[in-house]
Image 1 (cartoon, rainbow, N blue to C red):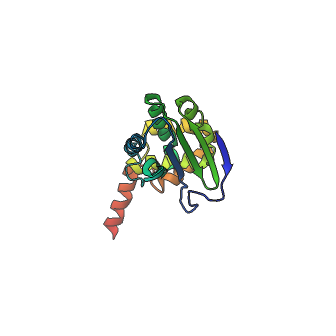
Image 2: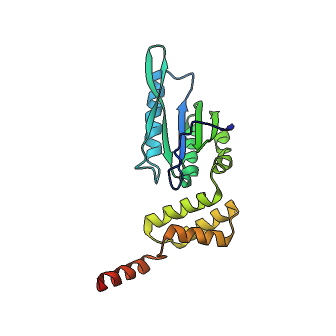
Image 3: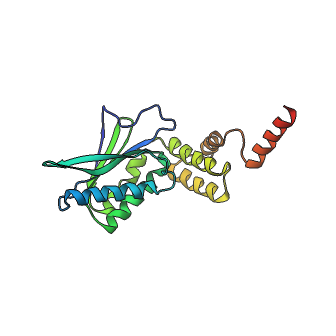
Length: 203
């Protein structure tokens, strides 16, 4: 596993909240070019099927062997709250077929890189990968994801956010401020509907 500064960031700082950049490339020497290209296509389909990534823009990574040119992996950007889901899917793939794989995760100028064919090794970088972002941004990203889905937080989502708060060692006060920021001026759909109805009544 390699953690380092990189002067050529894959992620633009203009993203708010900042996204994580991912690069996943197969470097398995026992596969021929056609087999690697097929694995790259399956990888793309697997990742795009994850919740929250359906609209993500993926690009294929190209490789060559002699005169053969082929797809060998994918590059994409994703919200920080999708980090664990992405790594879990990659680990599941390694469990099913342990192919030597390069995984690079980057935020800003900080880059985390690992090359492995073992799911356990890849799973071990989760905490290091989460450290690429301040805990407040991780919490805010998750709260914003929930609020965009339903417009309010369900009891289950509140419980998930509290578990995340504890894992990130945020105080309850900090978490409440971040939740308020994610939810905007309305805490529930009913409150939002009531306000909009009053607006249309008086306009």
